[in-house]
Length: 397
Image (cartoon, rainbow, N blue to C red; front, side, top):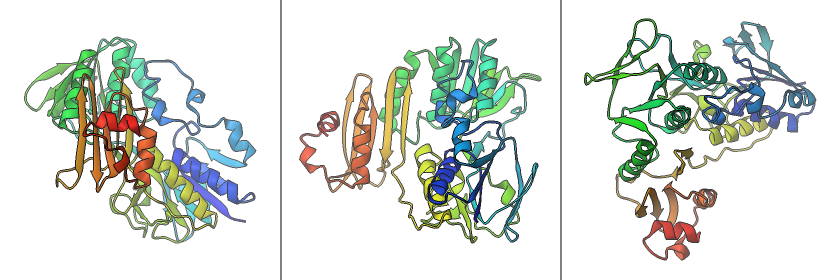
């Protein structure tokens, strides 16, 4: 009987477990996580920020789901090391042997080496416990700073602003959503954000956290001070792979995997935020879902292949929706661009030989699913190119 061991209970680990059980009804499946909760939706953390909510509200499946499928989950259990030669995982709760291992340990919030980040009232928003801590801080606060103008930073800023706090949003790059929007789209978004009372500081770098024992604001490298009652960092993530130190497994930025989600070690698979496939580590939910499923299928004996999906992001803040997908960097000028700019709306399409390869949208994003499918299918949209107006084209899809 096979013994499957899964490190991490994020969506990659969960999907791996589900795929294994669908194919092997008898094998032993064990999941461990350092957190105290079963798999929950990290996508919903900012939605519940500022609200008192039980973790079960965010659970993907009820606890009974694991029991019904005979999947053993160990909560509050940290991996200390792996002996891949003996096929043993060492944790602070004991040792576990395995025949097949799936590493889906996810990522942690990257907080830049800024002076004072170890003070009280300095947070990141990555886990349920983070959300609870920030929510508690919001109850006695009037001002907040969010560092990071990406998707998660904007979501956090919006949630905190909705609770009635004054919010300052800081971004190192000269525009918001630097990975998802071009300059024109970002300027439109900036106007929308500021209309809702969020003050933006673009192209700035934090030098230190103000205050003695707890945060009272930040000092920028240009000398300006911004006061606040707490600070939230949203500066990207790094893979949780420190427990692999000393192991003969190929690691670059993350754990290198092939199209079967296999690592360089026999019987060891990786998926989600820790996995690096062809140099890419998108660290986004849909990729983790798919990679986890493929890793689980193959751990159970199949030979399913992973086909990268176009990276996409959906954001709903300040009563507006933003969406981006696929190839949106046209610095080399190889792509045809079609766009439309209106009142607080922006649409831009990227084509290669009339094949849709990328899109940016601010406003009506109801066609986002169809756009993603067209990009997946490498669909020629010549029949829809009725004008150079991207909004009209999108409406006709």
